[in-house]
Length: 193
Image (cartoon, rainbow, N blue to C red; front, top):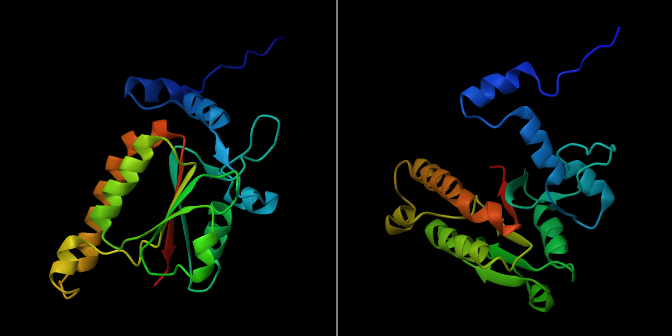
């Protein structure tokens, strides 16, 4: 007796009826997705988001998507991202919100910007994505960025974390139409505080 295997799962019909992306469409999207390698297989495997049909891990940061790297102070988040951004085969924009650039960074291959205002960074990143020039955009760090409302009140605004969360939420949702066609990997570095 021959067993027939369905081409799609039962949930696919429910998702399609409610205009959601089906699981099979999502799997196909992952298989077709491009990834930006860090240059180290071990780190690519840590960042990887699954495996292809032949069992190979997806390698590194997904292009056309947002990745967050977070951790405690001093766990080499910035060092890792500067090393990836400085690869000669990667066109990178590195936005520093905390003033962590050093004299050593002047000779790096990546474009450097120092800015802490979330709204200004938002416009810069969206414009850079629309230009489709960069392979990688790094914002280091979200914890160091501040909103215009917070700066206007001299960082004494009650509930400024809420205003920051709202601004970031709006930005991330507004970034989607810019990031998906850009083929750029966007990485946000965030220090746990």
